[in-house]
Image (spheres, rainbow, N blue to C red):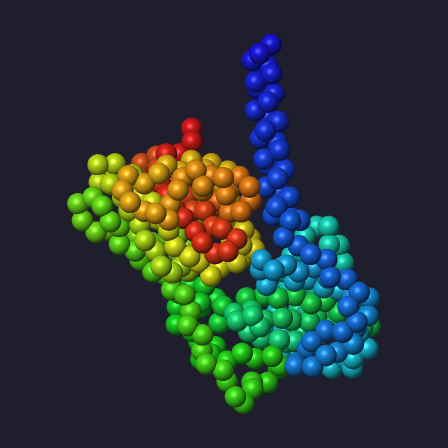
Length: 308
């Protein structure tokens, strides 16, 4: 009897944790924005009606909207190749990304660039139909892709553009964060450290943008590593791109690293103040790296034995 109760308790906890994770990635970060009477496009306010939208402070990529317009319909293929409508949550039924993409490809709708690099690295597009129905979303652009990958920014990425045509007075190019290797203290000698996360669709771990990495290790425990840093990547972008994990078992560093407290990390992940991601697998046989990112951009990483 006790065994059955124990198994039932474990299953209940697992189901609750899974439901919490599903809710956090599907609902928690979205905010409804219905009833807007105008939107900003091409640098000016434009009237709209029947506006239904969602957005979030955690990521520019959360924006989706459906509305109607009485603007003139002017066929154009200028931005047809760039437009990639992003799938909306299943509960936001008015935005069918697959259908919109097919209609754009078939010239049943025209794509308008409403805003570029606001925020930096993202563009806001509108798909307009001849009957006045319109759909809006943000997607990462070539500037954002280069910044995300840690590459040199393409020409023109130093200016904020809020209209179809480039502005005459470009603003100074923001200094992007970089993939910064950190030097591990402790042990016999310095070791370069990079932080990477495993994509949600699998494949090799990808290095992420970060700043101010400090870390410590102990060569007597080869699989050991503890690190602290900050990242400019939003929580929304991280959770959409990289694998989240519930296997969170950090230990305290063997040498001084004031920014890392194992109990505090576990409590932050448990409360939702931070989200844990799968870093690199098999950094040492049977050992994975886990990365916990806080909502304010602080982050920590550590190595731990893989749960059996």
